[in-house]
Amino acid sequence: MKLLVLGGTHHVGRAVVETALQRGDEVSTLNRGLSRDPAPGVRALLADRTDPEAVRLALGHGEWDAVIDTWAWAPRVVRDTARLLAGRTGHYGYVSSRGVHRWPWPAYADEHAPLVDGDPAGTGDADYAAAKRGGELAVLESFPEAALLARAGMILGPYEDVGRIPWWLRRLEKGGRVLVPAPAQTALQYLDVRDLATWMLQAAERGLAGAFTMTGPPGAITVGDLLTTALQVTGFDTELVWAPPELLGRYGLPLGMELGLRMPGGSAPSGMHDADVSAALAEGLTTRPLRDTLADTWAWLQVEGDPVPRADAPSPDTWLDAAAEQRLLEHLSR
Image 1 (spheres, helix red, strand yellow):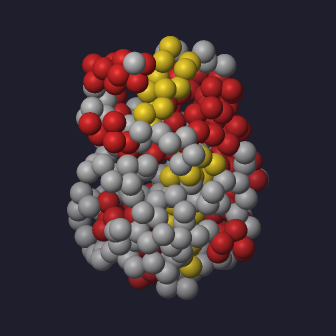
Image 2 (cartoon, rainbow, N blue to C red):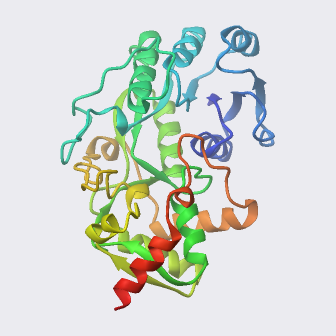
């Protein structure tokens, strides 16, 4: 398959490029060329996505079997690029988000849950949900019958730059007693970035269109599974000290928010980790074991070091009060 990846250097885009190369696809990327050198075998097209004329020149007269777009900011940028690619590709895959669903998310929600409003010509990105929905609408304008909208939930695995698993692995690496958000039986729903990439590429090859909720099966793992498996694959000598949400709130500690277990006001979010993913599973989505996701993320961190945090996702290190954490640990030990 002749593939164009819009982005291709960070998290999802990087995983898509690497997975496509492993499949034997002919891969081109379009980005600014600032973050990373292109992978061997990739044809690098250089342009700033916010400059439509630069994108037009970089694309030239190229045509592709499929395009995958990872843009997460102003919808107008998606609209402009999609218009340039109309008639030059038979498939446009857009990495969207479950965030396009109107809050609060219903329990057991599927693709038909209510959506936020979005503007395909929007120039702002402060409202992430509206920006992603605007991006979806922008793609649909130019590819009404050939757009695949992958509404991802929590994406984990190598290259993650949001501040979830890399942060937790470094936190557990310190050893000793570490505060963690109870209850351990709380369900988590996530998708390994490489499983998302594999599914999107297979969907592109088949010409699959439509909107799909993209995350793992509900009820498959818990927060206890996540953290105990992390200790097993790394061998860290760390004691997990489970703290209930009411105590975390009393001590001003937002642990659990990074995994979608709590909201800023302290409430437990509805519908966050019980999404109905039967549509994606029916279309061939497969998920790898948690142990593989965590082991491969740890191996990546050891080789490349910690990722630069995204500007829209500051590290929990900036808002977790170490003194308050120690006071709560002392309280729990009593």
